[in-house]
Image: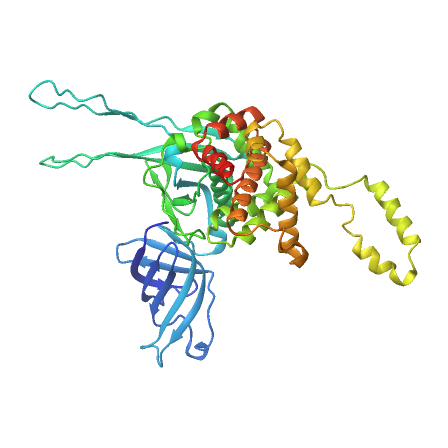
Length: 470
């Protein structure tokens, strides 16, 4: 997923298996995913058309079967079949399998390596005692025991496994080195085969959860799929052959930190070990209600280049949606509001009634000021947040005035709206507010949130930095 690839081979459409054309597949996680072929899949009379094949099949020179999914022809040139060239943009690649029709693109399970998953899990099978350096000869004994997978049962038949995969050292006639490496994988097994779209939805869902728990940008480094279309039998026992799944990342070109330690993580596995199942279940179940909040919040986290104004508006919208769906959506009871509207319209001239009725459509929505105030009230027992937002009224005034200015660009509010550095630090406070709301919804207690934020170096620094700016 993060390595560039160039694969040469022969390519064809499932409905035209005899027309195999030479070509090169190029993949870069952020820049390019394209197939360039010599020749054309089209008849001579169709040369002016641009193809959009759902599936292109390939066989690399190294012997790998490849399926390219949802392709779009973007360029074709040439005067004859001998000189013709075509370029296709590719949405998804499945390396190691031929899916000949859309109905076959299903997966029993997917296995992922997220960045920071090793640090979050913080489990090692290595046992390396201090070397014996007292004698003249150095003696080191390294032992390794593969950790037992951790299983988490989700509702609706889903099952999660946190597994450690290990690569064994290569043996040589003359052994000059020995290398072992372990890597953590997150595996999601479905009760029945799921379409790629459904599987990809879960990849994104858990990517967001790990981003929240680590307080870092998380993305997949490697994705393996296991499908009924790629199985083999050894001594009558069924084995799924792994299928590598690749697609371009919609994230900034961010690399994992060289030095990122388990104690930097907001909520490492050890801290939630006894309630992991509750947290993961709540995260998945509440997506039906909180999906807009997830999308608005993580959109700002993953889009580092987003203008500050857009980051601010996204976070304010996230808090508004959260309040509407989790606290209250009405300013007063609906029956009382209906009577109020009827009374207003009764005393309004007929020619203005339709206009006024439309204007009053959302008149029973609590104001942004009320929403932020009630969210802060809900979180009043979290001391960290009280320290971060020490002057609640001043904070709410700044949020409301800045939001109103950026939405309407009312010149009367321009002097009250925050910009530049001040807006940046207001955004950091809003991010924390959204994070704490989400953590509460998935099962963290106020005391757990408070102690963690008070101790985490990143959030301690935020308190110190904002105090300096007052």
